[in-house]
Image 1 (tube, protein in one colour):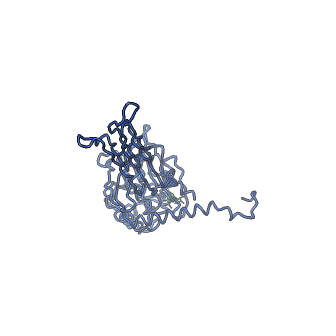
Image 2: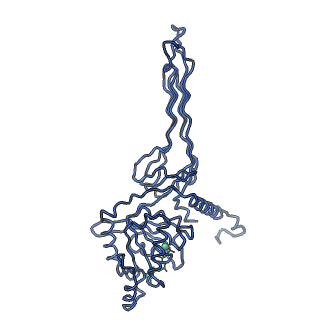
Image 3: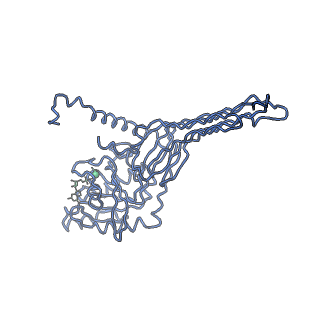
Length: 379
Ligand SMILES: Nc1nc2c(ncn2[C@@H]2O[C@H](COP(=O)(O)OP(=O)(O)OP(=O)(O)O)[C@@H](O)[C@H]2O)c(=O)[nH]1
Ligand SMILES: [Mg+2]
């Protein structure tokens, strides 16, 4: 399944390196029969480090790297020589990755910038060699410290794409069509629900070489926050957007009701999403005549800026871009910092089920037995 190329959720088991033990060595050479303690310290175990990288857009490179182990620290040696430090393991992740503890669902950290590094798990400290334990009353310490043990943890990495504006709408609202018209992105477009299965990002060019990023996510339906449709899986991708563009088609039965359902789903998923600046776009307006347009204008919600657009005829698109540009540049909308709540265990279960389903579908796709008996020419 092509959609599995977009990996925004991986669970990995990480283990930092254990510290090397200190040495309990006593100095000996041709001229010294009973030298003093000279055992060196053990090396530090390797850290598990996360590093933001703009070269990665998804977590696909980690999909099959489910166990990551850092190197152990080396043993301390004679002549007070230190053990070698264990090898650090650097995990490169796309900017916008959020890390949760897989067992408790607790938020651990998030990585927003290219090159930003966070030590996810510290390697164990190396043990002290017996040289440290020499005292006036114990000149032959026959002991040294062991290294600290490794730290193990299973973490969940989740990608929350960073876009300026996120498109929110029911399936078939025309979200992908808008993205394809205003940017060079080529999302799939069709007149059936759930055409879009994974988020698409597009760079919208604006006047004077300026641009902003638009994220098209799969359609949201009533109950999405409880896991219906694909909504839950992708709602997190709008958490980081500066503003949200709600899209309701002009031919829907009740514009206000549809808008309210969308708003309610967002609120249930994360109440902070409702604090974001919203714009409402009534799409597919090429299907309306003037009379209908006036009728709709009277019924739209009054508390939100509304634009009438058509991706087919181009109606309202420049106005929409102007409005988005003004809104994303407002100081009050620039704050895209969100409070990370612990991941809910029900969310975790849904995600894992989906992952498994997708993996199974992948395996089915790879299964060549279904082509048995078919000549290669026919394939
Ligand atoms: N007449 C008209 N049709 C449109 C317009 N925009 C989109 N459509 C049609 O509406 C249908 C759905 O469009 P999509 O862009 O795939 O809708 P979507 O919101 O991305 O849908 P999902 O991916 O399923 O969530 C397609 O058949 C489009 O051709 C428009 O401005 N005018
Ligand atoms: Mg779509």
